[in-house]
Length: 106
Image 1: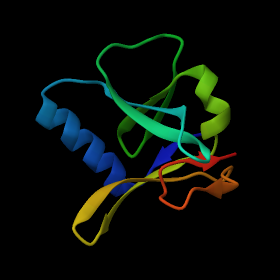
Image 2 (image 1 turned 180 degrees about the vertical axis):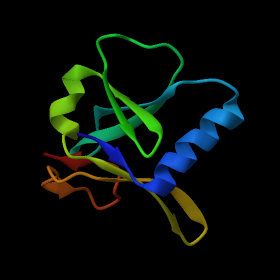
Image 3 (image 1 turned 30 degrees about the vertical axis):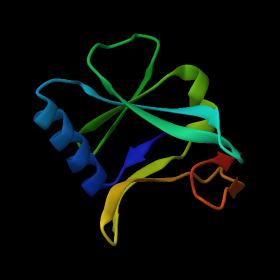
Image 4 (image 1 turned 135 degrees about the vertical axis):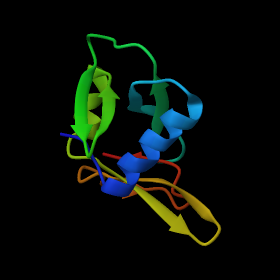
């Protein structure tokens, strides 16, 4: 199960509305950084029937099945820190994060 907080779901819907199209957002992982994995985000314009689909607070989150094991239990949040704001990922499977926060290890 992947969830989005109310504010994160609102931001997803606002970004889709501002963009003028889209069904939701796709969350994944890629190999990078000093700890091994980093989160990826993409807009979804067409349904790929192989994707796992999660609905949370009215937002649709799509995940490629090969990424589900890395993202099980993930909660997406939207946070403001000083002048910066963006999505934050809370993953109960994370064992370690690199010092710069770019990548993580499971």
